[in-house]
Image (cartoon, rainbow, N blue to C red; front, side, top):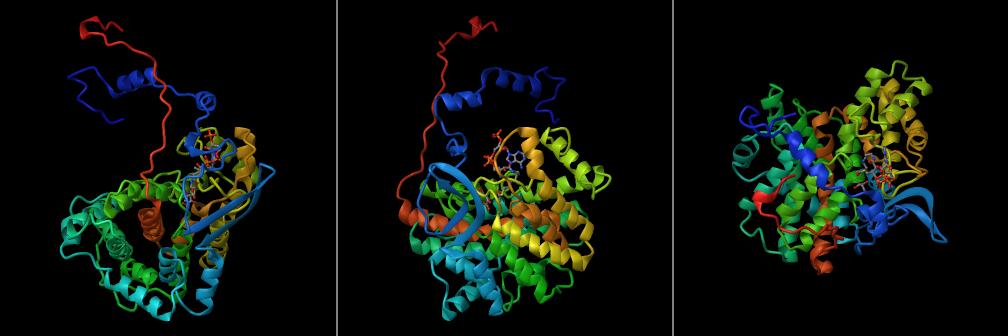
Length: 457
Ligand SMILES: CC(=O)SCCNC(=O)CCNC(=O)[C@H](O)C(C)(C)COP(=O)(O)OP(=O)(O)OC[C@H]1O[C@@H](n2cnc3c(N)ncnc32)[C@H](O)[C@@H]1OP(=O)(O)O
Ligand SMILES: O=C([O-])CC(=O)C(=O)O
């Protein structure tokens, strides 16, 4: 562990500080129950506390029957429209879908032809970063972690905005479009700098092309020879649509709503949302899935043995192996029970790609884990909750087969989710009207002030 201070100067170590902390700061799960405080803002049955109203999106994962939660097939609707219908509709008309989804999420209706062309044009015209921004902000202080750089770069854009704090709808619309457009550039530039600085590889910055839609712009920036197929770009576009939005209550969007309700600027808001999404229980799980799979592939000798795989999953849950968090990453969800529609779609794509690219054994292992994880979870934890693979389970495998580096798994999530964050920020600013401020039940043990001389612990 890193030392806080030089141990030769003082015997106070970080572990002593932690021991002092632990001795005075215990809150048990029983206390939550006793005071009827909703841990994680969840009701007793795991459903979320109702925290707001939104037009933007609905996430359906269970039914309530006579007060009981009944597992159901997952359904995701953007502005009331099934996400699969949006994807199929755009494909059947030969269009990429992400730009259309940006419009739909923010404004509430599908764009007509003129509006569609306008949003594509606006996103292209705003893609480039301000002059010298890549040199002064992205290339300086490189980070191993692209999410960290993304958050810092977004926060710094505040200083490049002549009117950063104006909360009017007009100003937030301008800022939202500009941020949605710029995220791919920030992500790909940050990745190039990371490659150069930490991986000692060649760095390249290709100019953006006006004819490129967002998914194409990203592939153009990531490929050294700038070549990619229509099929690859359509698949990345599909991934972006599936990650674009997930209701007001997911951790990063709620973060964006909390900050917006305090009337802070959009750059602080989106930087905070990126920080939340980076978390391993949230969007950062796609990165953890990859690490978990590498670990399983190394340590399970026979990938086709259900017994061996299940035994290893049980060891993960018992915190004996893996990152020792006890979590099977990419599995479980706050709302979904029988299925996450995004995982269903990504799995379909992964199966096809795996066959084409020779990833058959790997895909079969993922599928085996998806099948065995719920039983292992029930056996080890005793928890009867119905769990399924979530969006983060197959996304990394799809990205890997598309040649998207692991460094960009979670950043790709952020570059897609910015659409949802902006839609919710605008909704919070225009319809919320009250600062979000829940209460915390204090658990004080009365103490009297003791002079320093008399403190003999
Ligand atoms: C984009 C996204 O954010 S999708 C989610 C990505 N995250 C992951 O894949 C990480 C693994 N999964 C998890 O940690 C959880 O399932 C979450 C965070 C997604 C949802 O958590 P919750 O809503 O609290 O789940 P739920 O109410 O079902 O949890 C019940 C218990 O089972 C545990 N649990 C849930 N999923 C898992 C899992 N995959 N592995 C081990 N334990 C789990 C929870 O930690 C919780 O334990 P606790 O009672 O001691 O607090
Ligand atoms: O809804 C959630 O809690 C997490 C999630 O799947 C997302 O944000 O995409």
